[in-house]
Length: 378
Image (cartoon, rainbow, N blue to C red):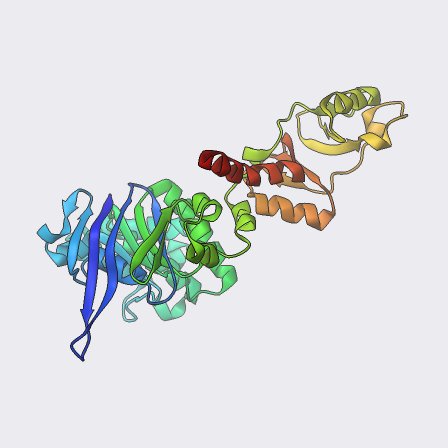
């Protein structure tokens, strides 16, 4: 969807010299993907982004958007066909939120009823009630609310491509996380192709399908977040992603990908001997007790029932916590540390037991990529 081929930008300096801001950058962002451009200040990431919609003219190379060479397009028409979000938001203070959202549809000549209906739908998508916010002015919104409007304004004309220049950088950490989550939920529905400049490695890991690391105008590594963390190509990338890169990978894996299945379970009416036998047979120290419909209700520890008699109901303990199958491993590890346990029961939205996850399984999952990499190198 977005393809850059040997893209370069050279700025002339007042003294007659020149500075290379982007140096032979080649990369491709596939349809429906989020690509985060990352690197230190002055590395060329923002320059590269702005060349895509011709806000900065390129010096050489080729840019293709949706199969069209941008050199063949009128720059104004190009920009109207690409959504653009900036850190400063840029809402027009003298226009209502409704009119701000509809700026590009109005320029494109959309039917007014259609464009205003679109504005209401987009506000609902980011959890802002149209009945409350459509007729307000930007100064009547919080910074986080304004940023949400800035994002959906870029989506108003339903562009296939969205460019974002540090769109969440000025928001406080709590609202930033909320807006990031809302944006990812929205992206799962609309599947836009997005190039996204950030300075935050944690944001890139959370948001991106692919990450482009820049240094001194050059594209140093272009990879998925997991590949970037597991296999940095050089010392610069290793340093940039941080010494805790293995721990950062916890946010990339979901509990459902790592948990053991739900076969190991008992009910309150089962004999405690059955629970003991199942644990010994499977080599597990714990087993979950489920209710009549299969919801997680408690657990038994093997050492507690070695000589026990009676039913599971007479000997079970309350679960210290559970973890959702869609949670990331960082959430699971945090709960394990908080409750001083080495395993958790995994549940779905309705509390139904789906399996168990252990610290050992998490360690194995994190190490698998490194083992695969070492084996490939042999």
